[in-house]
Length: 285
Image (cartoon, rainbow, N blue to C red; front, top):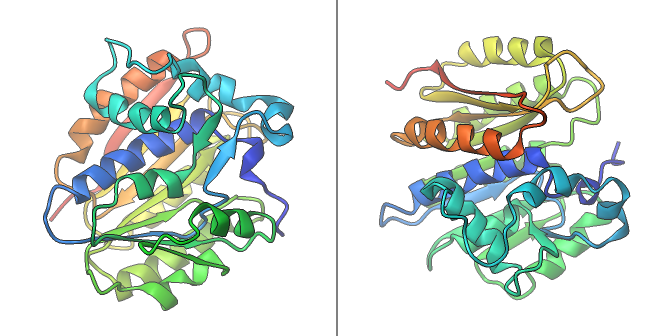
């Protein structure tokens, strides 16, 4: 099934959570001189017009990036981690009006250095041409029409031997958590030192709890769990929270996220509710 279009959800609170963490992971990679490769397995369209009909249908961005948007200047109370993400969103909206939202490909491209590479995989027949157009002529970016779950066999390990795999599937079919687990095992076999970040939705607690238990059995070190919940986790038919697990997490990323997520919650929370989580499913070796 390929019914999911991220344009309807671009910039919502789950995007803010996911992308603010992605920026921290990319900055961590950039602190070493050696080149790195980013592989985005479910890349989407690259960036999104918030004035488009899909974005305007439910205006989900108003409960996400819209709550953080203050124009061209950062708010004084923003911490450095959140500011790093907001600066990249502002760079796409230089006139101070929130019109476009950068997807993960655009954020990753902004943080590449000369010598780094970005591999983007997308198989939706509408989003793939938009992704190609977004990065046409960019020699540091390769765009592929392919099933993101088959990326390990094709692109890993990359020659750089350093980098990040971002997995952000649509969760539009049953069994998505098992497909993720199978893919993570293949990735670890082929690229044991590669960092992997996996996003997942939270409606009710049971599915993600089972996912966490299974992750612990994979034997991948430094597996960190982060979550941002705006509603109680008791509705399987509603997006109540957003989760991201990071495998082979960079050094001290947990400290940065423990500073950033409470700030995000404070800016995004609804009626005083909400919760955050940053803890190790598997400790670093």
